[in-house]
Amino acid sequence: ERYARLHWAYFERFVTAETHWLVPDNFQDDPVPVVAMRTSPTNIGLQLLATVSAHELGFVPLEEMTARLEATFESLGRMARYRGHFYNWYDLETLAVLPPAYISTVDSGNLAGHLVALRQACLALATPGPCATRLAAIAERAYGYAMAMDFSFLYAEDRQLLSIGYQEGSHTLDP
Picture 1: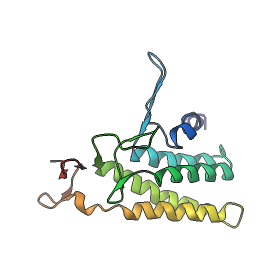
Picture 2: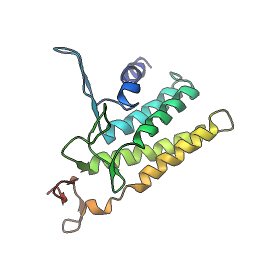
Picture 3: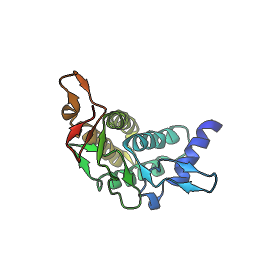
Picture 4: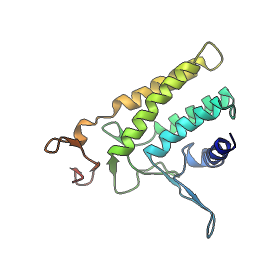
């Protein structure tokens, strides 16, 4: 439990209105404290599941968990996407895509899996009560984002494999 509390403390400290309710990539305190004001789809997916887990472990009441998830989804709704995919890096101050504009198959797959898991968690928690309607809405939004991701353009037909990613600037898959 102590280990889990320490991990949740990172999200409590750094996921704020200043970061648009999205988790920063990392924090370094040596040689001086610096928060990396960028995030990725994998970071966001882990944040979503950490938020639900914090509730399940009793660290966060249901109302706070729901409000945090809603705030995160509000920011996600303002972020540019490509064929349903979130880009690999976003600036947390502006929510702008950080160059080069890139779609990572791994990050997209991670986020899609996290979104499906989040949907199931929210539906399980959406029993009759004060947050039921809100949780059902979050569940549907999560599922919508996951299902909107078009992975077909990431498929390298000649190799019969998914490519590592897609360079939007050159419109090419990674070799």
